[in-house]
Amino acid sequence: MAQQAASGKSAHTFVGVKSVSQQKLVRALAAYLKKTGKLAVPEWADVVKLSAANELAPADSDWFFVRSASLLRHLYVRAPVGVGALTKVYGKVRRRGHRPNHSSRCYRGPLRKSLQGLESMGLVAKDEAGGRQLTSQGRRDLDRIAYQVYAEGHKKV
Image (cartoon, rainbow, N blue to C red; front, side, top):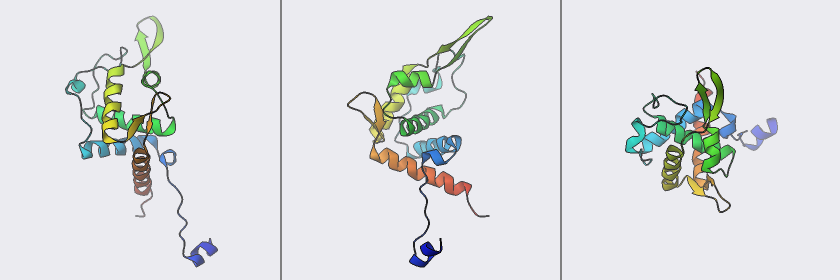
């Protein structure tokens, strides 16, 4: 530590997506996507169910931005990923009354629209082997927002 101070270099540690709370990161990413205004929300977004296991549409009016932010984080951690695998990730348990529960995949349409919007922003690209992965711009944006979330949590009062 004394050598770093003597040489004038700061002890900067890399803060990535895995270094911060995923809930805080996804909310910050959703706010960023909403603020930029480049992610087009489909007109059916306020009435669509996300899975056959759901009874109603999402109560949160910004669910499309939150789901897109969650997709970005998932692609950062595990890429490349196809839409079929994502339907399993975002699926849920289907409750069937007195009969045993079954797992139910989520609908593909909202996932595809979200990924297409992220592709148009330049954050996601199709992989030649199949699936989608983050671009260098997408990784840079996620790292930047992760650092902002980290810095917000470590402010000196």
